[in-house]
Image (tube, rainbow, N blue to C red; front, side, top):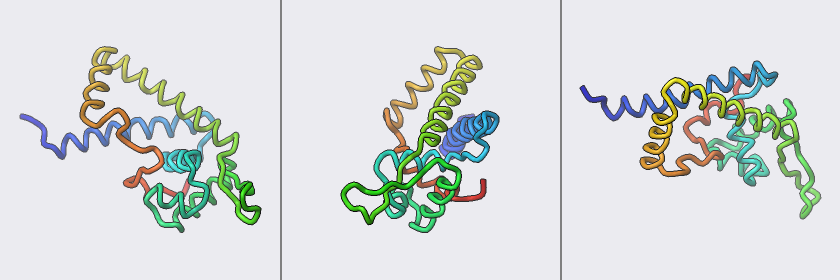
Amino acid sequence: MPRSGADLALLLLAGFRSLADAATEELARRGYEDMRPAHDFAMRAIIAGADNASELGRRLSVSKQAAAKTIAVLQERGYVGRDTDPQDARRKRLEVTPLGFEVLRQGEAVFDELREQWQRQIGSAELASLEAHLTTLVGARPVRLDAPGWTAHDLGGPA
């Protein structure tokens, strides 16, 4: 019996959650127990140019207040800092710190390891086929990493 469209959507979401949860757990084992997927989205948005709470909120589809809370959490943890804007000394711009870049690199390495695990489970050809089909269906760049929208409720929440 064929699956429904809703079943397909939930299966795809479960695949994402499986990878994201496993990556979060592995990052915790590597010493980044305070890192969450929403923090990754926020730091990538900052790298892409969201240099204040208003812009971060727009890019993440959350309120300015939620973005400010996320910024405070990331600053407290040392992943994000503020620097003086070279065009306006009164303005402070957000920037990802070296520690923030390191945790992003670690996260990328973890996702590569998780992909390798999936490859061992289903085989190289099957995983390549899955990726090719998904690329055909959703495009080569299906999600803007700086605008998760539907995961925004995680922003600024408890570690």
